[in-house]
Amino acid sequence: MKIDKVIIDHIKMPLVHPFETSFGRMVEKDFLVIQMYSGEYIGYGESVALPDPTYTEETTGTISYMLDQFLIPLLFRNTINHPDDITTIFAPIRRNNMAKAALEGAVWDLHSKQKGISLATALGGSRKEIDVGVSIGIEKSIEDLLGKVEQFLHEGYKKIKVKIKPDYDIEPLQKIRERFGYNIPLMADANSAYTLQDTNKLQKLDPLKLLMIEQPLGFDDIVDHAKLQKQLTTPICLDESINSAEDARKAIELGSCQIINIKIGRVGGLSEAKKIHDLCAKNNIPVWCGGMLEGGIGRAHNIAITSLANFTIAGDTSASNRYWHEDIIYPEVVLSKPGTIQVPAAPGIGYELKGDSIKKYRISRKIYEN
Ligand SMILES: O=C(O)CCC(=O)c1ccccc1C(=O)O
Ligand SMILES: [Mg+2]
Image (cartoon, rainbow, N blue to C red; front, side):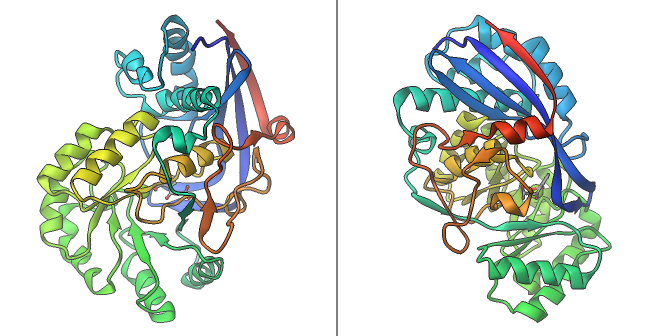
């Protein structure tokens, strides 16, 4: 496959509802949309980093720089026989996983369009529809939070994830259990807001029978998580700590987690995401697909990877209208039935870019010709 041209649009879109985590509050998302041309086909990719380096060290700005200075020149200079080759081509560049994934996702889309198969099929996925959940940020009041939980349960979402931090944890979760009972699939995400010193406090969450607690400790830790897991009955799920299949292998070996949240951007692309999926399947570690408040292109990639067999837990890939007034793709992502999204069968990601939305939300455009 020869890449002829790459167009990068910088988009800034307001969120329908502000999203607050232990590391900050977001009211809009800015990201890059990649259009990659090869012969008669166009592959789509999206950068998933946050505007600030608060979740990982990457931002939309660092991605833009890495694409411009290093990754696009490497892409243009090398022969690509299969999307898996991108991992090797980008290997000399350390980290910058979300920058790499933005391009690699477009190559996977191109590859599946050239083969005339869906991206899900190209990745080895067989699910026709996927179960999805919703991630709820820190709300202004517990009443607001309970209102949100009620709304999303009503829409049929199959996992309710609530962001927590040290002054907002046991109480909101307890109130949710009191109001909605112990049968609703409930979990918490701490985004690294605790340390081992908080072990006693985290043990107090055990009676709440959460599905899991996501990333309670350091964003780069796997050692302390193993110590904590021995003292909790609630399963630990790792997010920030897992940036590669090697990280996953070490975390599994140490017993740092029982579940892994796979985000395509965080691990550097679909090929690495698939590797982690396969490794976890072999080790009886269930996985689910995390989210980065993506626009429609990133969302489409998430849907495709979730069609793989070991994605047995509902992910954070919610419908377009949970995030956006107007998404950048058509059709928009909708719940085909309660808590379920259909995996497109059309070639590639199975969604088209919506030119009007791109124009409306675009800040700038760069064009690279090979
Ligand atoms: O709905 C989504 O896209 C998931 C939202 C979410 O939880 C999240 C959003 C931005 C950065 C990190 C995280 C996270 O999973 O930790
Ligand atoms: Mg998380």
